[in-house]
Amino acid sequence: MNRATGDPCALQELKMTSSMASYEQLVRQVEALKAENTHLRQELRDNSSHLSKLETETSGMKEVLKHLQGKLEQEARVLVSSGQTEVLEQLKALQTDISSLYNLKFHAPALGPEPAARTPEGS
Image (cartoon, rainbow, N blue to C red; front, side, top):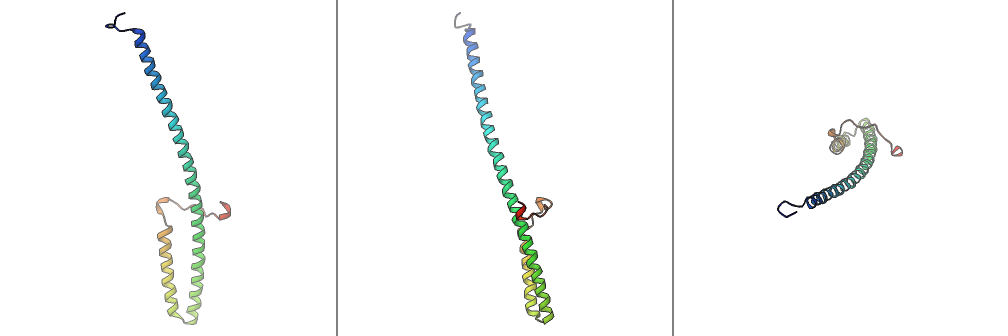
């Protein structure tokens, strides 16, 4: 055959080579996506574990705060009964500060309902 009409075998070989290159490129892309998927799954597991620990710590902090507020209220009752109102006013201000700090740091309404309280031993 002459060059003007083209060689059918050469054309077929060129198409096969192009198809093989495309296939190999797709295989490489699939392998890269699999590796990325594995990496993202591990990152999700790590983040989930970290979130669980943070929730447990937050729950513990809430319990400590409740305990401290209870002690504060008890101390306030003692001060009222003994007539020490100046110190009582200072305690009220402190309790307000603690409550507002708690609300700023630990309320995240966008996260949805609060999970059931967990103890550090249960994690």
